[in-house]
Image (cartoon, rainbow, N blue to C red; front, side, top):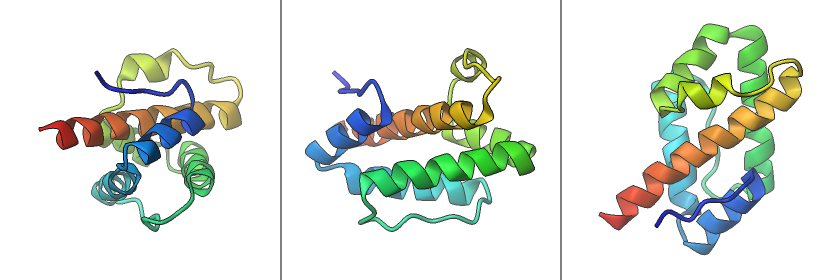
Length: 116
């Protein structure tokens, strides 16, 4: 059964404990590249810096490049229903929640690939 955290910190801790954190960062980098987003995280980045960095990217995309933001969500395969369920009144808060949804989806991909 897929171990999943209830927030970004828990999720990244689980990925680290399962020794799949590096693969999670690599998967995120791969999908950012597919979405033509010129950002790349070092594989050895701390979970806190990854969390902050992704949050900043999402916030910037929502505010400045909305089409690229939607494309990223599509490429990563974040369920539209989950994104629509978020409260969009505070963009800063929403971008943090979207970053969590992205990391959770990337974690699912990495975890399942590792189980095959």
